[in-house]
Amino acid sequence: MTNWNQLLPSSHTDTFARDRLPPKDQLPVFIADRPELNYPDVLNCAVELVDLHVQAGRGDRMALHGVSDFNTGAGDFSWTYAQLQDKSKRIAQVLTQDMGLVPGNRILLRGGNSPMMAACLLGALKAGMVAVPTMPLLRAGELAQIIDKAQVSAALCDSLLADELQHCMTPGHPSHTASLQQLVQFRSDAADGLEHRMARQSGAYTPHPTSRDDVCLIAFTSGTTGKPKGTMHFHRDVLAMCDLFPRHILRMGENDVVCGTPPIAFTFGLGGLLAFPLRYGASTVLLEKHTPDSLLQTIAKYRATQCYTAPTMYRQMAPLAAQHDLRSLTHPVSAGEALPDATRQLWKQATGLEMTDGIGGTEVIHIYISSAGQQVRAGSIGQVVPGYEAQIVDDDMQPVPPGSVGRLAVRGPTGCKYLADPRQRDYVKDGWNLPGDTFVMDADGYFSYQARNDDMIISAGYNIAGPEVEGALLQHPAVAECGVVGMPDEDRGQIVHACVVLKPGHIGDAAMEKALQEHVKQSIAPFKYPRKVVFMEALPRTETGKLQRFKLRQISSH
Image 1: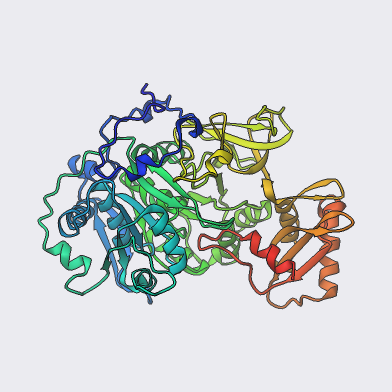
Image 2 (image 1 turned 30 degrees about the vertical axis):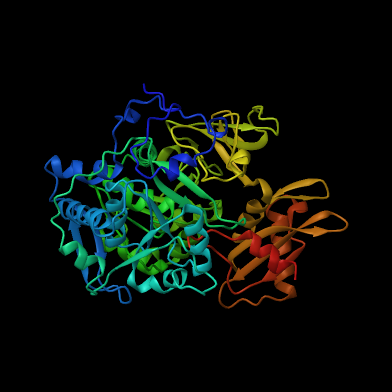
C-alpha cells in the first residue's frame, strides 16, 4: 500500500494551498490500508467521477436531474454523464482560457443545489483549481472573510445570488476585498455570462494531471463558533469519502437515485448529493428549495432510493409520509446534528424504514461512524466505517474502557488540514482527529453520542448532555422542536435551559412550562429536567439545518 503520510510533489502552478498546509507534526496520521484506496499518483477526482463513466461506454446514463425555474420548481431537465462531461470541460476552458486562471488558483463557487453549480465545481476540479464552494445564504461580510482567508481571485456565481459578491468587489463598501478580481455569473443570458462563454469553447479539453495529494477543495465551516475555518481536502480525500461510507454502509450502486437538502457547498451535501452518486454511476436530483412535503414529492417522483437530510426534516416529514409513495426509498440518511431516538422512531412508525444515522464533519470531509439496516441499535449512531479507526479517550489521550464517557478520537484516510489556522493544534492530537464530541463506546464497538464537548452541562456536579434532554422533550405531544443549553447559575454552576417550539394549538405559558418539566422528570433522571423553559416561534439554525446553540445562549442570557 502507498504511504499517504509522505506527500507527493504538487502539480499546481500556484502553490498557495500546499504552502499553507499545517506543519507535519500537526497533521493527523493517514491510514489507507484498504485495496479500494490504492489510488495512482496522478489523480483528478473530477475525471474519476464523470469522465471514466463516459470512457467505459456509460455516457448515456442519467447523471443529474434539475429544474429550470428556481421559483416555481417547473421545467424538469436531466443531463447524461456525456453531457455533464462536456459542460464541465467547457467550464474548465473558460476558467483557463477566458479568465486566465492557472492550476492551484482558488475559485469561489456560489449557488444553490443545481446541475449548473455541480458542473462548475467539476469544471474547476478538472482545471486543477482549488474549489471554494460557499453557502447560498452567506452575506457579503461572511464571503469577504472567506475570500481574504483563501486569497480567492475569481468566482463563478449564480446570477440570482450575485449581489452579495458584487459588494465584495465594490470599493468603499464595508465588505470590499481587494483579492476578488473576476466574477462570472451562470444562469445568465448576458454576453459575458458563463453559458455564452461555454458556447464559444470547443469542449476539447484535457483535464489537468493533478497529484492525488493536491488540494482540490477548501470547505469552510459554518462559523457557529466564531471565525470560519477553511478545511483543505486533497483529490484523494474526495474519492476516499466515496469509497468507504456509501460502499460499505449504503451498498451504493448504479441504479441508485439520490435526493436531499444539504447544500453541495457543505461536505455532507457534496458527498451525498453529488460525489457519491457520480462515483457509482448513479443519478442525483439537485433542487434548490425543499419543504418537508416537496422533499417527499421528490422521492416519489424520481423513485429515489437514498435521501440525505437533517433530523428536523425527517421529524417534519413523518406526519406527511403516508400521503406519498416512498416504496423506492431504502436509505434515509441523517447527519448534521444528533438524531434523537424519538425522531428515529417517529419516522420508522410512519414509513417502516430504519433511518441510517451518521457522524462526520467538515474537517474529516464526511461520515466515519454509521450503521444501517439490521446493524442499527437503538440509542447508538453505529460502528466505525470500514477504513477508519475510532476510540474514546480521556484528557490525556488515553483510551477509556467500554461504557466510559470520553472524547471521540478518529483517524483514517481523511483528516483535518486547516488552512493556516492555529486551531489545528486543538483538533489534532497524537495523530488523531478530535471532532469535539463526547461519546460512549460499548463492548461491541457501537458509539453513542452524548454531547458536544462544550455542550456538556455541568449542574451541581452532575454531567447532563443537552441532546438527551432534547430527546425527552421531543417525546411530549406538544413539542415540535427544542434546543437545550447550559446557562450560568450562582447556586448550581449551570442550569438546564430549554428553548421550545410548540406545535400549533398549544400555548407557551407557565402551565405548559410546568407540564414539560414534569414530563422530563418522568422520562429521564429528574436532575436533568430544564429549570427554565423559553417558548420560541423558531429555533436559530444554520443553512445546513444545524442548531446554533451559541445563539440560544445569547437569547437565553437576555
